[in-house]
Length: 294
Image (cartoon, rainbow, N blue to C red; front, top):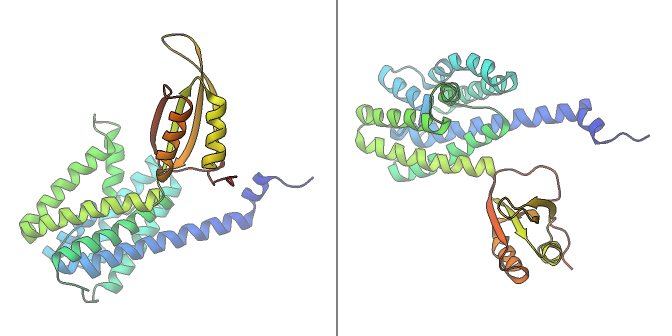
């Protein structure tokens, strides 16, 4: 009897390849962050948010090397991350922070590419954000403030995002006292750009959308989605909460560029259909790849 997919997934070779891929991506992400910091942001006295921003200001005020401060400031949060999130997250974060410290140490004597503050904020934010996003997508982190926010969100009536935003507003505001208010504003710009770049790295460039269609004319609509869009469709059975009547529910995942065509298909076959469309951050398995369109 031939081994199934589960056997291949558990094979030692597969696990080794997966592990090497994780370390490679963590290293690549840390390199990107190091370049963004030492080649663009730090020489121009522009900071990032979170623990990295605190380390940059502390290095400026004390003269201590940024590489060491990055590791020291993040170290206390690794144990918290291990307890609250898990061993894999803690190990990945430890490796990423260590790799970042090494890259920052090597790059700190490298001259800045530009002394234009706007260019430094934009390109530094993009490169840093892509690096942080790569590390997050791989299952690690570079900032202890995220771990603190996860823990506090369980005890306070605020979300993780709200707590991180509060931390970063305080840190970026403090940059005005250390480097001047113009640098604080450029730091805010770099942080916003990095935030968007993180989304690109985590979610990818080709954003997917999921569509839920409740229709009284499912068969021709389903065939049109399959043959005109080349996408798979899942057919569900629902029941109207008000009328109690049975309804057919179609579910499919398409790209952002195919939304207009999907809406056209729905209007052609059932103008009164109910359609709900939302963002999909990640799709695993299934038949997301397009089928041949005849």
